[in-house]
Image (cartoon, rainbow over all chains, first blue to last red; front, side, top):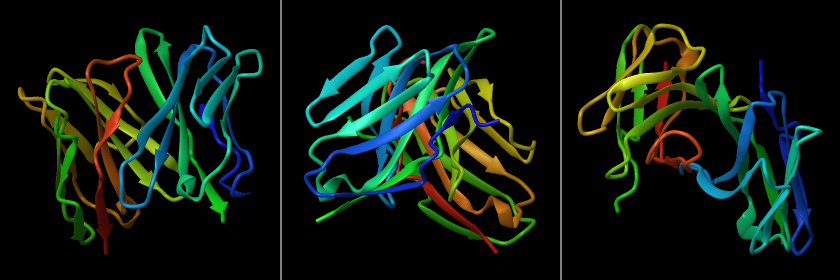
Length: 114
Length: 113
């Protein structure tokens, strides 16, 4: 049972345009969400996070939006640059029945075309 | 601070063999988690260790095991290797559990022939 889903395995965007990556989760106990970026032959690196008490968090070109009622978050990259081409993973964390959980989605491969 | 290191970076084994992977977390970090990454499956959680205790476990068979030492270094062992175990194995360290960012190592690429 995939509790964190990224339904788009890949996305291509023109340089300078907006990239929107989506993530859905099923368990309402998740209350902290993160995005990671992964280049080939490297481990994922942290990009941006958001707590469930907020609905938006911004860091430079990266903005994460959280819609708790829809159990949906999205990452916006504006403007997109070729160096942003990577696999993006969303992650959700929280405590479920006394056990701490930290679950990653399946990833979306972003390709920014020059 | 030095980052998370994993050894070896690449491994080739044959079916039925066993393998041990090592992970050294960032100095001061007490939590180490292990993940398996395969195409289309994302990062599948294996287990998490905190202060030498396994605190969390994913849905993997008992052939996958791990441990953590007093210096927070962790090892992961896979016995009786199967072709489907071929994957990138990543470890991640956190200062504590909870909402901390996870810091990943570069991974160990395991190929089972």
